[in-house]
Length: 170
Image (cartoon, rainbow, N blue to C red; front, top):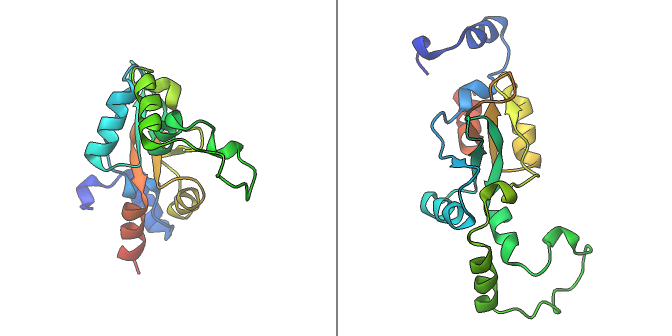
């Protein structure tokens, strides 16, 4: 990252010998979906970009949540995966691929705002890199980064970008 692109916060962190922040690993031009996009549009965007998740924005541009591959796939399953008891056998799930596709097709027009993956936390731009790595490691391979006001999406962080920032200083 060139000196001209560094924020005052980054310069102060470097001067103080502190870790890199979330700001240094942000993809500032991520794909996004509007809240009224459909499940079909979300699935197509996820497939086309080979993405795990895509942030969803309100009409005014404020961050709403993430539509993930997991949240789309759950719409075609007869039960929610998190409702199964640990170690439960799956033998009773006798649905074939065609039936799952049929379920997904019935849900295709559902608005993406109904499909948010509530297991994906967002962090603020001032979050430190070690804190961001903990969030990435515990929750999701993609973490939305919000402005410090907590409303506006400024980008996303991924494992790949975080590791580049980490290894750059090693």
